[in-house]
Amino acid sequence: MGRGKIVIRRIENLTSRQVTFSKRRKGLMKKAKELSILCDAQVGLILFSSTHKLYDYASSSMESVIERYNKLMEDRHQAVDPTLDVKFWQREAASLRQQLQHLNDSQRQLMGQELSSLDFDELRHLEHQLEMSLKSIRKRKGQIYSDDINELHKKGSLSSKENEELHKKIDQIGEENAELEKVIGARRREYATTNPSYSTRISYGYDEPISLQLRQPQPQQ
Image 1 (cartoon, one colour):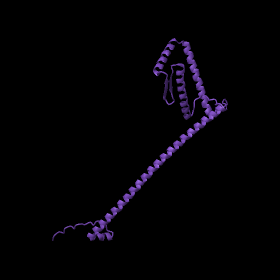
Image 2: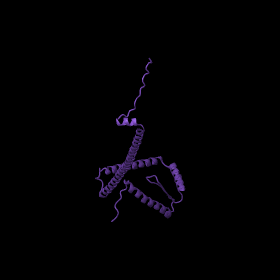
Image 3: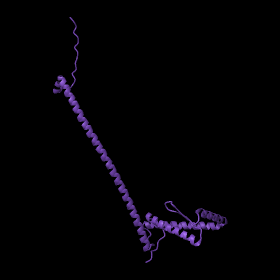
Image 4: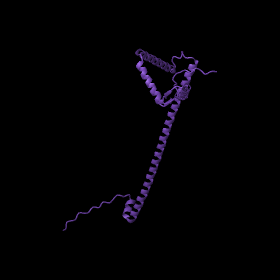
């Protein structure tokens, strides 16, 4: 049983796209090297990934290949017919319009629209892309939930530690107040022992200071 037909379109799933890029990049590099050896051709290959990484291969040196290419392009531009240049840009514009139409069709198909033109294999490929996208979305949602839960656990742990510290401070203040009351009571008892009048006032509830007032001098006869 042969391999199914591969639809040449942009791979939506990021992981599948990176795996395909890695495999095909190695194959392209291998083909370029074989072409330069078998046919004695001067080959220069420059490749940028979607993550802006550079991959290159040159049969001799990349500088000589680029220099030769630039020289030939200058000669070609000098001898080119203006009408051919217009036709070239017309073809480029038509190609870009076709690519844009293809992207719009792909977007509508991903939204579940205009599926009547797709065969069984294309529908299965589209279904696989949607499943992979849904799996990535759920994985990302789970990661966000996990991060939020961990953050709440951290905040709860900090709150528990702060409550423990506050309880310790409250207990410490209570112990200090109890010690202070003991010292005050001991000093009162000691003072009452040495001052009977103070003890009498304490026993009758007179714990206020006694105010003394001097009598006015009487005039002499």
